[in-house]
Every structure is written in C-alpha cells, then in structure tokens.
Length: 314
Image (cartoon, rainbow, N blue to C red; front, side, top):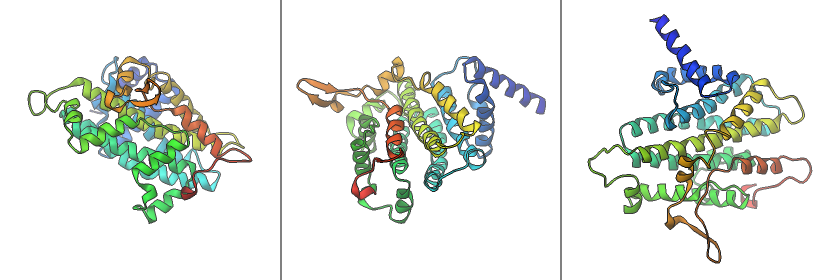
C-alpha cells in the first residue's frame, strides 16, 4: 500500500510539472494537498489525475497555493510590524471558512447543485471584500469582531468604500448571485434550474462557478502576499515569500488570465447588469483586478503622505 501511494504521488508531481507549474513550488502544492486531505478536506487523489488539467484542476492549484501560504505565515514568513500581525489574524481567520467553501463547492458541483454553489460564491465575495478592506486598515478586523452588525460592515457599505478607493470586484457577479439567493426567475434559469431533470449536468455553469471561486481565492492570496512584502520593505524578504510571489505571477499569466475565452465569458455581464458610463456607452465586462489591489496597498503603506479610508473606517 505504501509503495502504491508513493507511485501515485510521483505521478501527481509529474502532472504538475507537465502543466508548467513552477518547479520550486510543486513540493509546496504537494504538501498542501496532503495537509488539506488530513483535515478532512477534498481527497488529494480526487484531482490532478491526468496530464491535461481542466478548470477544476486549475482551481485546486490556486486553492492549494493559497492554503500553503497559511502554513508558511506561521513559521517561515514572520511579521515585522504590528499592523502586519493584525492583518495576519484577519487573513488566517478566513482560511478555515474558505477551506470549507472549497469542499462545499466541490461536493455541490459534483452533484449538479449549481444554484447553491453560486450562493457560496456570493459569500466568498463578501468575505474577500472585507479582507481587502482590512488590508487598508487592519484595526478594522478587531472592531468587526466586537461589533459585526455595525452598518459600516454591511456588504453594500464595504463594496462602496472599496469602489471609492479604486477596488472593483465584479459587481455583476455579486448581483447575479444575490438574485439566485432570492430565487429570482432569470438568475435561476441561468443556473440551469429549468433544464430537464432535478439534477441536470450543465458543464458551462459548473465551469463558471469554478472560475469565480478561483479568482476570489487568488485575490485573497495576492492581498496577503502584498501585505507581507510591504511588511518586509526595509529588509530582505524570506525565500518562502519570494516563492509565493513567483507562483502568483505565474498564475496571473496563465490560470488567472481574464482574457482567456472561457474566463472572458464568465466576466461578461448579462445585459441587465450593464452599467451606463456615458452617452451610448456601457460597461459590460468586469474581472478581478489584482494590479489595482496591489497599487492601492502601495498608497496606503508608502512613506510620507499615506492614503486613508473615509472617516468612518479610520
């Protein structure tokens, strides 16, 4: 049995290598899958089972990159400043819920329960928005713990504050997911609700959910990487942090390329969500902007005149 498991492990590593995953990061992914499985997460033998990766395999590459950073923060990427420690707490607090969401999505999608899976994506988007807000002011997390029902922590208020600070996560996806939450007819139809059978197999909807979840996890991942880099601005960054940065850069140009046709179609809004931006001009496409997140963080943590959130979030 041990010999068989070792063979399967070597085969999985080969598949990762064949998909051009950065070689120095493959061991981290492999360890992450083992840890996640040991915590009763998705079994490691359930994905990366062939040389040709599908969208689900890509999702688990992104998730396990994110999950491996969780373990590195504890010992290999120590904090330098108090604000970094405060943000680490906010990031680590979400790892467990995102891990549960990952497993829940996989179970729901494998059983063709698309609308419920889409609702989980909406929850993950709210979680991400709050995390980004806390990256701008890490003190907010402790305040939220003490008073989570304060109006400034409502989804709409958080999204508005982020928008005012140049951060746009796809609002049309959030709105579409909200329509699914309330069982609205058109959104449910888009989830395949009126297809024949109670649990119809609809690959295009399955793919859309994995893509959305993949980008949400990636946005959380780069936010933590950037915060750690800012923390080490005056000293040499740990090698593990450099590996995560290189991995994300690779992901951004491959699995997170929004102009890839399958992903482009996911981020192209239904016409009812198109936003008028001028005379006879509408915005109908919106993805996750990883560059904007990093650029804004630079402004909040630069020397001299730092950018600040609006008064109620200070």
